[in-house]
Image 1 (cartoon, rainbow, N blue to C red):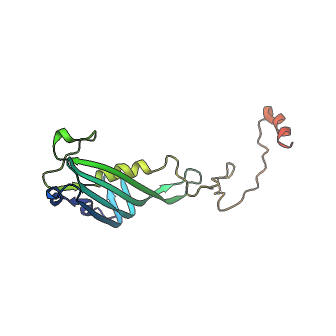
Image 2 (image 1 turned 90 degrees about the vertical axis):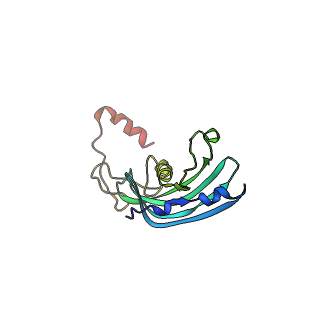
Image 3 (image 1 turned 90 degrees about the horizontal axis):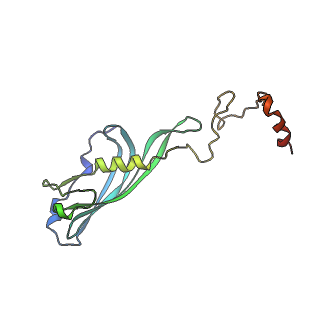
Length: 170
């Protein structure tokens, strides 16, 4: 994975000197990126739009990528598609900050990596599935039911529940 994240650090200092309403788009594309301490993304694509406002720089980010994940049903590794779409204001002064408290850095450079990492982590589903109709694993032999069909007898029924078997056939 590429751990050089320089393309996620945008030099936006020149926009501070533009008139209110000035907008600049920054396309982002990388085959792979590592966001420390624990996130690897592949096929990162999207754009960042920076707009000069009276209060500061409005940064709008729209990114798509994928990350390695494991299906909760069949335990197969797959590439989980992710999307991050967020907006932040980098204020010029402390009294103009929003609840995030972001200030325009004196260097004129904004590092998007920490925010992108946070948004991508939030985009990961709690129960990732390799496909919506994943059949999971056989509870008897453990085979992946997406790849094979098992014909096991259900004789291991608790005798106390055997009366319920008759209801199943109706």
